[in-house]
Image (cartoon, rainbow, N blue to C red; front, side, top):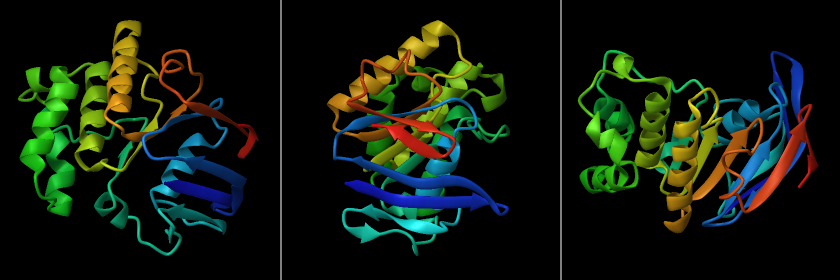
Length: 214
């Protein structure tokens, strides 16, 4: 479903990723595990088209994404949850979840939102609360729900359990397990797989911008 081959990415002239290769099948969950600074976020941002590619290729269902503008990823069903959540503080939780709908004009969003609330009922409970009033863990759930609004094909999750209370990290693992049952393809980038090991089908380990084991 997604195949990354010999991917090279530089940031401001500094090599960050070198020769990255990774594949994910439909309905599969893979882990991209590595310490801070290993290149996990750069990889996810490159797949999302947010960073230019120096060399290599990214194919989605045999379509080369190298020349596709980043904004097209949402239309292809890619959802991205950044590590720092990136919620709009002036908006409610539900308004943040609906941001991708407003930017893409996707159809059937009401049914999609209802489905998300069944998967993550916590978000429905605080849907009318300002984003700034939510805890860090609650904000992570909102960011995941927002990614799911368009992430019908592929979800890219950057440190979904990092920096939140253990009980919420465990809950995040439960939600990811339920998404696995729904057949969603997911790449999970984490410093370690302590909270998501039970849902990952395969693991890639990244060090200094290269995959060292798979």
